[in-house]
Length: 419
Image (tube, rainbow, N blue to C red; front, side, top):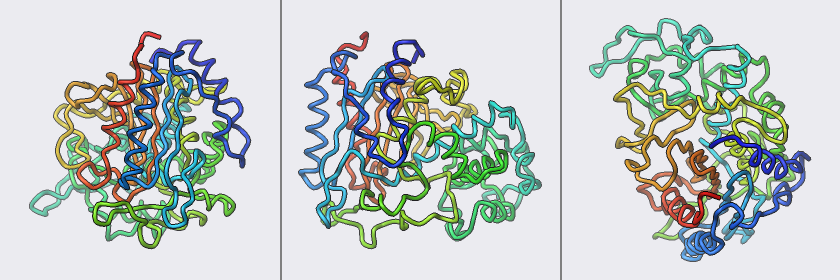
């Protein structure tokens, strides 16, 4: 993605109105003609038809999808129900629990502080968190070993600092305390691998949230609101929602006899209550448009609405894999060939090995309830999609694999990529 003047002006114009907190921001998006940026209207209609069919077939309760190119939104659709029980419709300003799509926003916060010189990628993690000094590594035979090479800040941003996967810490109940409590508990536990040798999807970004608080001197929610969400006009993004917005929060769903049904008990914490544990790993709620504003800023090389959040070189650094040779991303169990991991983003290094029609260097992530997005710098395409299912991101579960379906349809609709 070359950060040219044409695209920056388009993105700035598209986002300029989205700065008033408290109103429905989706009304600010004016759709550009798809053909003006190389998309086919018929192709995007096919994307709509496929997603609508999943709802009509009771495979999804509701879904939103957004496609942008050169900073211009050419497709934004909401279909189905945000609450199957009440019948409330899915709308463009529906609020979703975005779970692990929180992580890239924390990564951007970390890199803001990196640009301020508050830390270096090669810094030892325990320079910034002294509680982690002297950690041991738990070997396969249960014995404790010395750490060969102390974990670095680059490793904590790439899930290779030696901590275990989330299930290894279930009994620690991090969410019942605060971020300092999480650090205190981790400081008394061994690592699960030698730093740099294994990709393990665990508490790494909660640890980053703690570092953001410590280095900035602000609570995580305040830093994110003042330095990122507020300036970007992400009025509906935060760790909780105001009482008047609760009715816009999507209900979490599950499956019974192959059909989508509401999850019992709502499936999640009360979104109107401020949590004590501000989870950088998965605590945010957001809307489709709000997240597009974030993704578009990153896709623009760190600029939006005339304001620079990160340098373009910093964004390029974030989408460059930092994994050591032989270390593989294995989010769902088996290794994922062709995929590397940068600084809080997965990166498609070889689309033919994935396989996917997305361009080389596409960077992306998703959330446990099924939300997903990608930023494609090769084709200058951004996609954001939202559903709300228990285990909605698991590719072998009952949730339709929208993360495979939507790239195929999106790039089939990109009929003139030279535009």
